[in-house]
Length: 110
Length: 123
Image 1 (tube, each protein chain N blue to C red):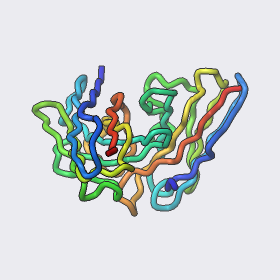
Image 2: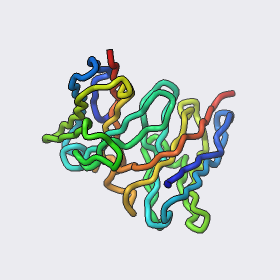
Image 3: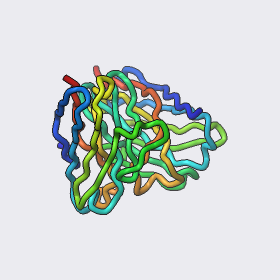
């Protein structure tokens, strides 16, 4: 049981916009930045979004993040086949004094 | 170019120990905190431990506290994870990652990751 809650799966067709949600509590998302990671099959995770809505250099602007209260969302617009991956949210948890991850959302591009 | 190369994984019996290493290059190692994250087969990501740039501050997940020890040697640009009293549920790929800042606390800003090293705990 993960501290942050994500839907286990999501899907969309090429060109569509999809969103992935991440729900937490006041001790994590409610009081700290949210981070998003993309993990392509068989590879290490990659930082996709930092500090709620910032993109590292090289990440396409099709990816965007937002946060409101104790929830956060990752949006992917102009969906492409190469976006098929597992997506994880993460945040520092003040009560646990550690980083907590969501359980991951497997995105399928149909 | 930032590179992180983990090593030290392998097959170990329950109760056994291993020392995982992560050799870093491409950045000023002592200026950045480092972290360890693991992923059990077919499962999600689990944060394990973090260490500040100086090595003075360390942090652990409750699931490994008292069994795992993180350390670093800034002269060798290497971070270590000593894993003791291993259990079957410690079986996972262990990733080291660079933290985008000097402190390992208060952030999940893991901006570069290694390819991981597999630890298998089985008799």
